[in-house]
Image (cartoon, rainbow, N blue to C red; front, side, top):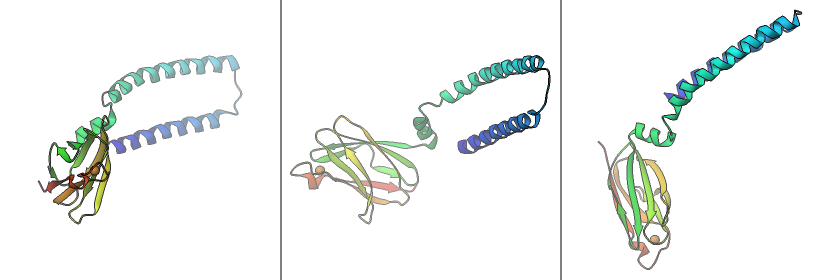
Amino acid sequence: MYQQVAWIVSIVLIALLAIAFFYVVKHSGREGNGAAVAAATGRWRGRLLWGVTLLSIPVVAYTLTELPYARSAIANLGTVEVQAKGYQWYWEISQTKLPVGKPIEFQVTSADVNHGFAIYGPDMKIVTQTQAMPGVVNVLRHTFEQPGTYKILCLEYCGVAHHSMMTELHVVAQ
Ligand SMILES: [Cu+2]
């Protein structure tokens, strides 16, 4: 929807620019009183400058209210936020029952060493992955298209019980 608005605004502005361009081309060969023409265009330029300046104030104010854009887009889409933290040697996941077809934002970090946060589908094929790092929150966005039991495995060797870092996500239809 926003893309369509941006598209229409662009087309209108391009059309105005084209009209101005053709106007200048059409009137360029004319002779006239140089001083009078300069005074007239000066007046118009001044008005145009003030018009654009005044118009830009509400436009800028309105568009700034959506900042930061990524965050407001997430809120509009009803994104589900999930905190995931890796430990030697288990995962702490804030929510393991997730809706199908809704954008999920995993905020992935680690309590100790580097881990790999990998999501595998019911067929045990990898779906998506990121690093789980101490002191850093990596954002991983994914929309599950199929319900089922997904697995989270560690993809980074992190110590003797690395292989036991496995937990399940249950993706369900709403
Ligand atoms: Cu590991």
